[in-house]
Image (cartoon, rainbow, N blue to C red):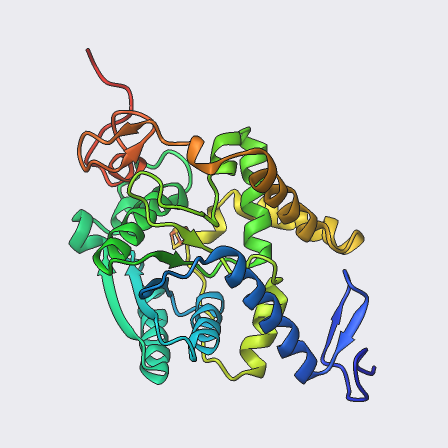
Length: 310
Ligand code: SF4
């Protein structure tokens, strides 16, 4: 099979566009879409723009860091600062951490680690072993991770925090909010234009790039990444949505892009994200919340629930 743009052998076939691409044109296509998203999502200041990058050592965040580094290399006033969240999941995070550290050293980017144990006095393994879970482990881990992400970005004085969320992940998250009927949460999804109530805006420049494209890009560009899976991931509701979307995409290529485009249009034309705000402040940590306590304090055990006893 030949490349649709030149005489070289194709290494990738894109079903939504019907094109086949050689190594050179595939890499070019990924980088072009990434840069387009950077232009859409980042408003560069006249002074320095600092981007905090959440890196787990997995393929998505490693490709994200590498592409940010490659794209920003010539921009003297952009500073990248990477960090890894260690949730305390035995046999999973340690390998990713080593890979993340190695990549940061190679690219000359500073790297810090923040742990659940140091911040919440608990670890995910402990939370799961407690046997008091209501819902999946991810429902506990997610809010605590978001809390630490924001804390690290505040510490870095970052203008943005970049997350390695590919198109597959993003379309799943949109659908999960639809299935739960959580319209407000869906509209609050990244990318964020502005700082809302102290939350550092999140950017997701991989949102239009399929997971398999991220994987292939990592291989072709020689980006080392950890391939381990979180042992708790299998319990997530996300897995059901993932299989459903994969089977629809197989029959109707481009479905995931259409789901992403649907939310993008909603956010662009009809809704001001700033107006879909979290209305209260957590009584414990002061973070924005939808009740007396934020989800992080409820999930890490500092608050019992959002129902106040009178
Ligand atoms: Fe946390 Fe769930 Fe991700 Fe595992 S899969 S790290 S439990 S959010």
